[in-house]
Image (cartoon, rainbow, N blue to C red; front, side):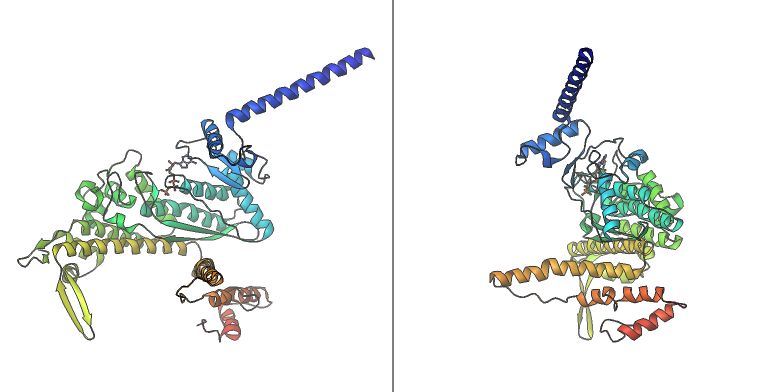
Length: 481
Ligand SMILES: Nc1ncnc2c1ncn2[C@@H]1O[C@H](COP(=O)(O)OP(=O)(O)OP(=O)(O)O)[C@@H](O)[C@H]1O
């Protein structure tokens, strides 16, 4: 008995010691690697304690920390072995707080909540330039590409979503002082899932492209990547057809930042990747030809030089560059010449042309280059969207965003002014709720009608659907067939 009691006592003592050792180890580890969730930080109001915790974790390559369900990331600026397929598998379907913080945990949690609650979710990524927002969004997309149930159709959507990134980056990103691959436009990406969680479509909304970069870059910065990729990587025949030489130094719009070559960027291989991506996301050969024709025309525009005539007005004398722009944009040379050196004034039935000074002509030339590039970028995004989801969904998404904007800014702001008795000029606006209702209203909206038409017995065709809409919403002021 005594012997046994001793044994029990000894094993109890040993277990207690072990527990103490474990506690101590985890406290030491906690001291070394910090805590995983800021909610557990003792000095939760102290900024220095917050930063200290981030720093500790960062030194151990732990770049993710939670604040409850919010994820804080510190850019490691080096490849960490935390984004493998194995890591994705570990995080799939696991409770959010069960594993160390990770962007995959967040992506997985959002996805599963969306499926169980049957509602929309969004992931907002914010931070200063170079913080790692674009990389984070790519990690999320890659995670969904692996974790979502896949069929051939869905794989197609997935590939397009993933491959639209290099194309958008080529045309919308540039080297800045803060980030060698800085996104110079705002991006809102929408992914649509079916009830089983398969990605069935997507939509990208771009806004506020930094067009001024096309004609001017600060020291140490570059123009948009695509220009350098074309000049460095474009095939000989293509460059000949576009009238370009393989030397970025020859183009005014490419050298103002004095850093056309950047060690971290390989324009040649990026060009190849963009070409592959363009063909996978279904850009036809003629689309691609026109696209690069326009990009080259911008480079030629930048090299157009004006001379002052005897009266000091801008003139273009047999300008080789202008002929290239004319050829690539399909504008007759005399129209282009007139447009670049004169301002058109229209008065009722009359048109007058007033000549530009050289400074004005330079300004107009740069404005044209910015407008051409800006519109090309919009066209590109629309084209990518076309291949992702049909026009109807795009329009619906835009209307909903507009509605959100109206609700959040115009309406609530004006209501607040009224409530607080602040005097202001009421801003008149068109409330597009009527259009959103037309699409989404229960039983009477286009989506409900489509649902009904698909479910009813008998053969449903585009025509029967159209008839049904005409019957039900034919009198709606915003419905036309
Ligand atoms: N998780 C990560 N792992 C390794 N490197 C990263 C990670 N996130 C970002 N980086 C590095 O930091 C660079 C800048 O990140 P990113 O382009 O995502 O920043 P951003 O916040 O989108 O910046 P901007 O607002 O200028 O577009 C990347 O090119 C990459 O080198």
